[in-house]
Every structure is written in structure tokens, then in C-alpha cells.
Length: 263
Ligand SMILES: Nc1nc2c(ncn2[C@@H]2O[C@H](COP(=O)(O)OP(=O)(O)OP(=O)(O)O)[C@@H](O)[C@H]2O)c(=O)[nH]1
Ligand SMILES: [Mg+2]
Image (cartoon, rainbow, N blue to C red; front, side, top):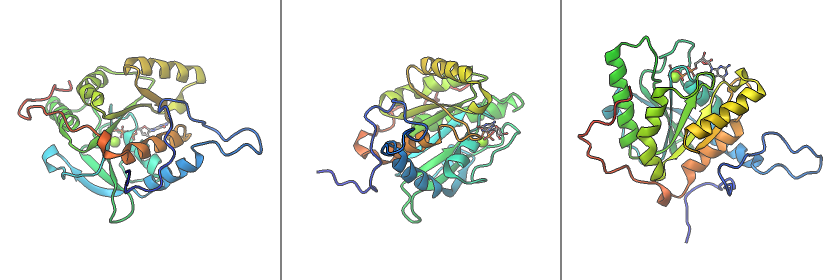
């Protein structure tokens, strides 16, 4: 008995890590590459994104039942730009050349009006040197807490600028979420701004990121060149529409304990 109240699902890939075709099938007459029609559904879904709410602190975030997908990473890594690109909206999330542009947790609702079925969360970046130490520590705590306790958190996209590689704060973040990933939290490393890399640099960055993230899934992404767009859109769709039984509840951690500080 499988009655899911979900739209017709794009075909699930047998192996999530399998490389998906990036380009159209080269031969005329070849059936459309699998995933193309599906990516269209995923893009249509992401395009429905609209602002839901903003929260400067964790306790201001509304409790939600639908799956939430968080975009995290170093300041200036390209989180807000990635959300705008995925949702095909120019100014949904605030992107900026100035690091530290995003200062609150911003939530965006997905799905038909009145039938929100998932939420994207744009988080402030970490590691920006010019932020006063106090504010930095506060944010790192908010983020650590968010990642550990957000009950409806379904997936985390960690954005990394491959020219900088995994920073110490990225590694601490990986440590923080590892237990939840082991319990079923979805996780993807996106190497952003891949348009700035040569082919060989990109390939190298990808294999390093896979190793450093413990064999996790990593993909190249460029908002400028739209690289990785179909694959990421599909993956997010799949995360959000996977039958609920597979989702892990938040760790039954003692909430009074401070999570490891991300500094
Ligand atoms: N070349 C190139 N530049 C990009 C790409 N994605 C983002 N950028 C640029 O990187 C800068 C930072 O982008 P944001 O999206 O604001 O970064 P963020 O991670 O949200 O930063 P914070 O909000 O400070 O945490 C902007 O100047 C973007 O235009 C990309 O794919 N290619
Ligand atoms: Mg931002």
C-alpha cells in the first residue's frame, strides 16, 4: 500500500551518486536522456519558491512539518546565488559581493500556493574575518543549533568555493552534522563558481571534496554557466518528496547542552 500524496515522481536514480547526463543525447533519434523530463518537473517546482519568513534567531523560526533543505557554507561561497539560480528568480535571496550579506535564516516556500510541500533555508555564511568575534560566535552557535535540532531538516547542501577548498569551519560543520547524516539526513557538497576553474582543476577539486566529505556526494556548480543545475534540482526534488518513513527524527540530544561551537 503506497499512497503518497505527491505529484508524479521523477524517476528515482538507482544510485544517487551516479553521474547524470549533463548534455542532450548526442545522436539524433536517441530517446531523450533519462532525467531530462524529470529535471523539468523539478525546475517547475523550484520556480514556485517565494519568501516565507526571516529569523534572526533560532527561536524565531516557525516550527514546520514539511521537509526543509538548508544551504550552508562559508560567507561568499555562493549560497544565495545558488538559491536564486535554482529557483530561476533574480532577487529571491539577497546575493552580494560583500561577504556577510545574509545575516538571518531566510526561509522560502516551495510548492503550489496554499500547498507548500518543502522549504529552502538560506543561512548566513561563516568564516568572514571582518565580523566581530562576538557576533561570529553567536552565529556559529545559532547555526550549530539549527543543524542539530531543526526537526524538519531533511537535507543540507554545503557550498564550497573550490579555490579555497574545505576550510576548518567547513570541517567542523561536517563533524556537527555527521550523526544526523548517519541517521538519514541528506547531504550534498556543491563546489561553486566552477566557471572559474579549468577542466582539470575542476576534476581535481571534485575528487578532493569527495574524499574530504567522507565519500559523500559532491557536484560542480556554476550559477554563471548553469553547470550542475539539472542534477541539483532533481536531487532536491527527490529529497523533498521521498516517503517520510525514511526521514530520521532529530537526535534525542539534551537540548540544554551547547552544540559544539563552530569556531
Ligand atoms: N563567477 C561566479 N560567481 C558567483 C557564482 N555564484 C556566486 N557568485 C558570486 O559570489 C559572490 C557571493 O555570492 P552570494 O550568493 O551572495 O554568497 P553567499 O554564500 O550567500 O554569501 P553570504 O550571504 O555572505 O554568506 C557574489 O558576487 C556572486 O555574484 C558562480 O557560479 N560563478
Ligand atoms: Mg547569502
